[in-house]
Image (cartoon, rainbow, N blue to C red):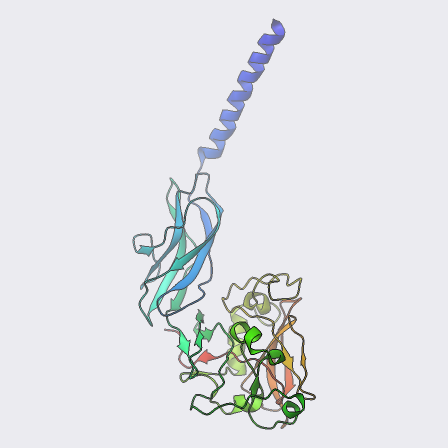
Length: 329
């Protein structure tokens, strides 16, 4: 009998202890802690974004999503999405935006204490179309507006056709502008990776759509400095994971929305293709102090966040990213 009483007393005190612990946890609740996902897939009237709630503040998350406005510091009293409840990551598809308009956006999360917000992103709606009709997504990074996709045009912006050269020996002997698809496989590589161009095509200054251009070295370094310089910026520019990049791709987070993918490289020496999955290469519009055969290039690597800036033969086949002539508003 005494044993039963002791067990009842013990159970009673355990219940009291649990209640006290739970009460202590609830004693100082706060608003949630969260971050905003970079704005990506920027089209004429829609974008993709989201957020991640890392702490509920001690109270259940009752609503979450993103809010946006034409003015800074948007709130849930402005336009918003509603993307469920609870902590963790969520994706928001923002639609019915106005074309060619600057917006401010941030994630929100609410509990019984109140609403908290993630960091703010600025973006401009719009999509770029080249003379072939290819559509490119864009992203605003600082004061710059970049294409998210590599160039894939087969026509200069004045309507002149760019020669498509598939033969290895013919490619190696070029001294004029040309393009090709990686492994000469248009179906596999065009949509995701874009085309490879030699620097002779870049030098024409007619590759990018009107209002856009191939970035020079200063513009590339402005982008890199926005993400902590050449030693770290690659992680912020590369697509995360190993769906396209060879592993490990550790540290890659694509917080920029730049979404760099690892494609191929075509040799100026023999026209062969190489390095698929390991590197992302782009031309820099600058051939100064490199001799008559070389131009500057920029590359990202599968196993580091470091960015390489180096010389390559003008006859090589590399990718092109375009930047808008005018800065973001």
